[in-house]
Amino acid sequence: MEQALYLCQHGYYSSGRASIGRRGDYFTSVSVGPLFGQLLAAQFVQVWQRLGQIDNFIIAEQGAQDGDYARDVLGAIRNLQPAFFEALRYRIVEPFPVLQDRQLQTLEKFADRVEWRRSPPDLEPFTGIHFSNELLDAMPVHLLVSTGDGWREKFVALEGDKFVFANQPIVDPALQAFVKKLPTRPAGYETEVNLVALDWIDHVAAKLERGHVLAFDYGFSRDEFYAAYRTTGTLQIREKHRQLSSPFEQIGHADITAHVNWTDLAERAESHGLRIAGFTDQHHFITGIISEMPELSEEPKDKRALQTLLHPEMLGRAFQVLALTRGAGPGAPLSGFKFARDPRAALGI
Ligand SMILES: C[S@@+](CC[C@H](N)C(=O)[O-])C[C@H]1O[C@@H](n2cnc3c(N)ncnc32)[C@H](O)[C@@H]1O
Image 1 (cartoon, rainbow, N blue to C red):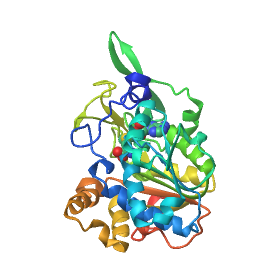
Image 2: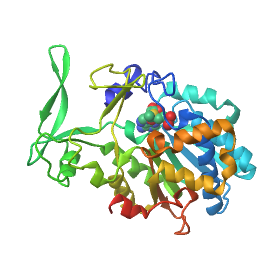
Image 3: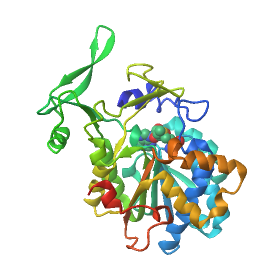
């Protein structure tokens, strides 16, 4: 997965071949249109106000792809709250030069607001927001298969000139430690472990002085993630709006994802002193924002986009958002979480 998506000119993302939207391989909330960024901009204004309208507010975005979301957010903040726009710097965390070039073009008008860093450890300690949409599902995972009384890892091997899976004992010490905590599952049950996401939150937590981490993605709480009925894992391979049956098809030309285990991520964040400030689905999150700013969705073209973002059978239920916070006080929940359940209960913590 790491090589198929990220190996220099061969990887689906690192080569610049990834194509998102109607004419691409799959949709995201960002590709639905500018409304997603506009709604989030309204939420960011509230965060800025609650943090005391500080002068040096950072929005760090990771997984920015072509820069469309950054453009939508910056444009909306400039309209909604010019004083916030003046106080704001937008930092895109982007390791791939080909994507940084595209972002530079998309964000030409905002050149004096935007800066780039290669990875979270390169970020300076900051007050503000770390935002991502569909970053976590694109991180390379380990594939595990149950033997009934333990686990083996599925590695990629060659048989003749074909790639095949080969089940082997687990050798990675971090993965060995991780599987000790897994529930027992019947032989043949498959699942994924995203250690990269845990590493990622370690680094982001180390840089966030005050503010929020807001991560949108599709996933499950831990109980749902290891639900006995899901025996085949959550790996998905997508190309031109079709699901392919094997990651060995269209290598470097198709997207590969796995669902997020939100509970693992939230607990790891708590171990770094972050507070779990909210967890809900995209439907409830956006409904909360709109309830305070109905004018955001009044135009007819926005109504269609809103339906796509909100509808339970489109993006509304499939996507969740996790908010982790430091130093922003207990206070009332952000407007996106005003219709949400208690986040720790929802995550099974
Ligand atoms: C599924 S796409 C989502 C793109 C965009 N956020 C959207 O919603 O349309 C995943 C993105 O994450 C990026 N990505 C993956 N790993 C990354 C990393 N370690 N740092 C920054 N970006 C990363 C990929 O290059 C790609 O742009």
